[in-house]
Length: 353
Image (cartoon, rainbow, N blue to C red; front, side):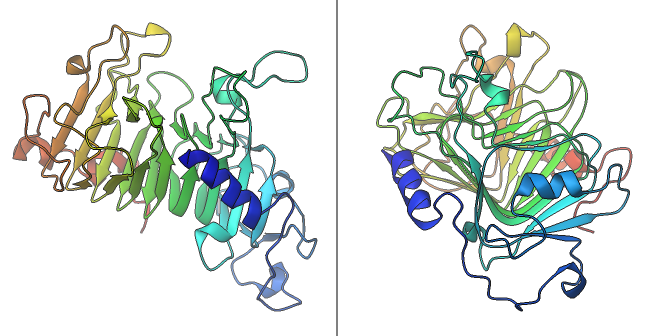
C-alpha cells in the first residue's frame, strides 16, 4: 500500500536517530548562525539532540521569535509545544524539507503504558499549543503502519495537531494516513488561525480536519490510494457556527494515484454530535485531479453535507466537474472569502509581512 511504501522509504533514508552529514561550518553554534538561538543536531554536534529538548530550553512567554535550527536527520518521538512557549520557530537546515524528519508512530488505538488508548489527539506526533509558532523547510509525520497492526481498528494517526492562534507553516510536509493534519482551537467558538504556504499534505481519510481557520495557499494536497471505494476524504471541517471562516484552499493542486471518482473533497464533522459544528471548506482557483468525481462531498453519518458550508470557485483540472452536487461561490461570495478575509482578523495579522 502507498502508506507502507512511505514508511519504508523514510525508515531507510532517515532511520531512528540517523543524522545526515552537516554541510555547514564545523564550529557552527548559535553565535555563528545569524538569526538562530539554538541548534538541534541528532549527532550531538548542536546544542541539544532532540526537538523537545530545544522547546523545553526556549523562554516562556516570548514576545519576539525564538528560532531553533534543526540540522538534517530524523527526530523520532512525541513533540509538544506548551501554551506558554510562544513565538517559537522550527527551521529545517537542510536543502529540502525531506532532509529533516520529525515523527512518531502512535495511532488512536495504540495503548499507553497504563493500558488505555491514546485517542486521536493523543496520537499526534507534534502538538502545537503555543501561539505564534512557525515551522519551515522540514517534514512532520506519523509513521503508524496500519498493515503491521491489524489488531488496532481505531487508526487515526495525527502528524500535527494545532490548537493555537497565528501559526505559520512554510515549505513543510505533513505525512500520515487517516487524520494527518488536525487544525483545531482551544474550545468551540474560539478562533485559531493557521497559514500553510507552499506545503505538501498527504493522507487518505479526513486528512485535513478540525475547527480552526486554516488557509492552504499554493499547497499540494495528495490523497493516497487505499485500494477501496471510497478511497477517502480530503477534508472534515468542524467549524463552529459562530466562525465565518473554516478551511480555505487557494491556488493549490489536489492530486492522487487513486482511480477516478473514488475520493471526496470532504464531509462535515460534528464532534460529539455538536449541532453547532457547521463545517466550512472552500476550494478555489485550484487544480483538481480526476480522483474527485461529480459528487464531491459526502454525508458524515446522519449529518448531510448539504447543510454544511462546502463550496468551490473557478477550479480547473479533470476533477473540477460541473454538477448539482458541486456548489459554487458567486463572484460576490468569492470576493469575501480570500486569504486576507480568513487570516487578517481584528488584530490585523499579516503572516508574511
